[in-house]
Image 1 (cartoon, helix red, strand yellow):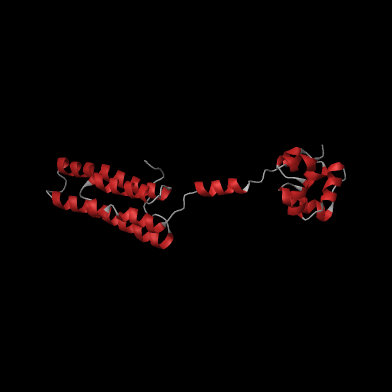
Image 2: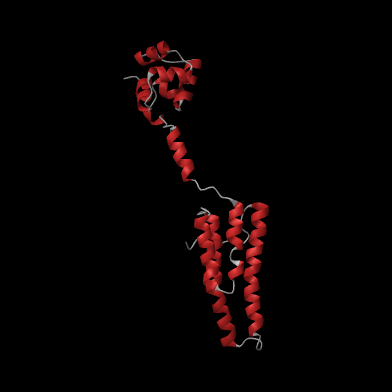
Length: 192
């Protein structure tokens, strides 16, 4: 069996379909499949149409055969890709602000919005991870301050500083999302 016929059948093409898509006559394709070696324009056109190296059709090793993705496969790949809508990402980011004083809600609302707005991407996960880290670390810092009684009795002041640090982080990320479509504060891992 000739290389051209083998590749054509592997790609589920008839001689007529290959002729139509390559611009080469059916008769020429039949000759090549019968044993004639293609050259020049015919060789280039057939190799481009089939998505293979030119040397494959000149009876050089089979390893060079490259599968071209079908239109259906390309559509499926595009459907799998999650498009990032930075307006929605900004909403997810800013949704933590109203609930900074109610820690579980500053995580829960962004998670709900992530699913509702169909933004299950790395950027949204980073925003939620930052809120989880802040929610875990803020009470720890506050309790350490109280138990160690550092620099006097400024309990209310440290509480305000902790809350404002989260507000600052959220607003700084929102500004960066607007400008560069990325997060200013991010981690190298996701917790969700």
